[in-house]
Amino acid sequence: GEDVEQSLFLSVREGDSSVINCTYTDSSSTYLYWYKQEPGAGLQLLTYIFSNMDMKQDQRLTVLLNKKDKHLSLRIADTQTGDSAIYFCAESRPLYNFNKFYFGSGTKLNVKP
Amino acid sequence: GAGVSQSPSNKVTEKGKDVELRCDPISGHTALYWYRQSLGQGLEFLIYFQGNSAPDKSGLPSDRFSAERTGGSVSTLTIQRTQQEDSAVYLCASSLRRGTQETQYFGPGTRLLVL
Image (spheres, rainbow over the protein chains, first blue to last red):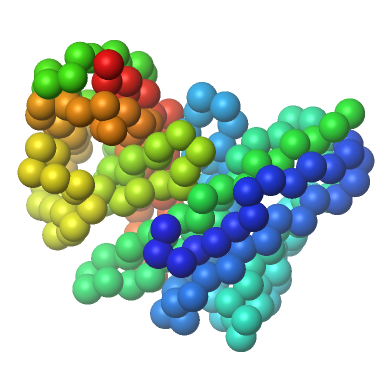
């Protein structure tokens, strides 16, 4: 919604790296987030990055942000079958005295053994 | 509790009936959000609470939808005269702000099916 876009599906083999991409349009975004949703569950925060950073690494996860192109990516190294889920990117934009969050439609990651 | 809880986890109702969905946020979180997730879709913002007040209700789809929050804690989302297009997962999130950074923590959702 509100111009946060993601590809719908990604399929990788176990042990390979996965790269999930996201584009957004609003330059006022302050933070960008990646969430994971497993079947029947709510969204679980994986990581976030401040908008003036280029990269953030957290164990197997690497977030890259190209602010000029408004492009965000999530790389999962050594992808496991347990990583199969839907991944949502989100941005927060300041609105009056609170933050409004905009989510993409989610990328379904399928990890084949 | 340790996380955001929602009840019921599943609700099946008949068209035209009213339903009430409940959200218990993480203790101490002043901000609370409701979202709707339709099958295969992203999250649609419904309403935001800061304490007991709702500065942004812009996402509520119609006047059949209302929400309240009491004591700066529990929130209820009420859908009156439910329609089949209301079938979706309703997600609640609470958050804590530190400066400009705000992290939302989501509940497991209520799956609503309107027959």
